Amino acid sequence: MSTIQTINELFKRFKPDAARSLNATYLFSVSGEGGGSWLVKIADGTCDFAPYVDNINDNGKMPADCSISVHINDLELIISGQMSAMTAALSGLLAIEGELGLAMQLLPVFFETEAQVV
View 1 (spheres, rainbow, N blue to C red):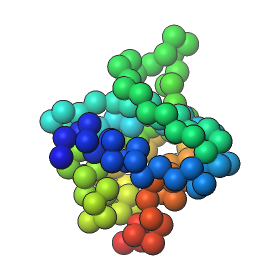
View 2: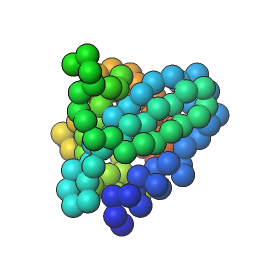
View 3: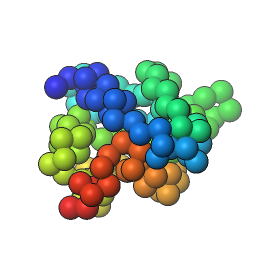
């Protein structure tokens, strides 16, 4: 699966009901072949994915409340359910910068919570 297909799969999994009270901006950085960065804005049950090029905005700060970095192969394992996001984070395969609580809030928004307990 290409990186774009993987990001599209993640977008398709978005659960508006689980994101009703979430208002945050995330920067997803995917390394590996075909990698890239996407700015993900979640607000009041909506989600917008947009490709992102710069790492720092005009005032020198990151453009997101939370930054998540992962290799494409590991992201594919997470999306397929072969590895949980929590396991990836604890083993250093998925890096989180910024508010950890915001990263945790993504689990019910994009994943079946039962499948993430590995």
